[in-house]
Length: 52
Image (cartoon, rainbow, N blue to C red):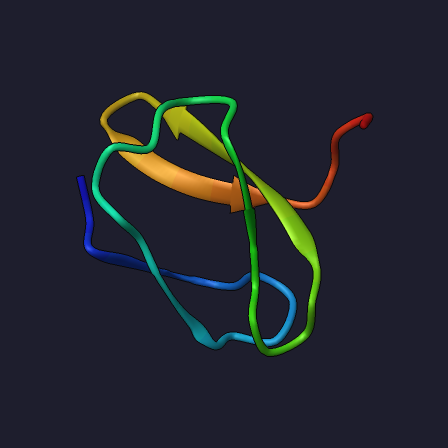
């Protein structure tokens, strides 16, 4: 697991704890956007397209 990911909205680095799983929600501390972690093939991505 990556130690940080890039916010797809504001491109800020989001630090991760390391125990996140697919489907977990994380919040960007810069733009305050809630993002969902999704594993696509062997790569982790953050998406803002999900239903709460």
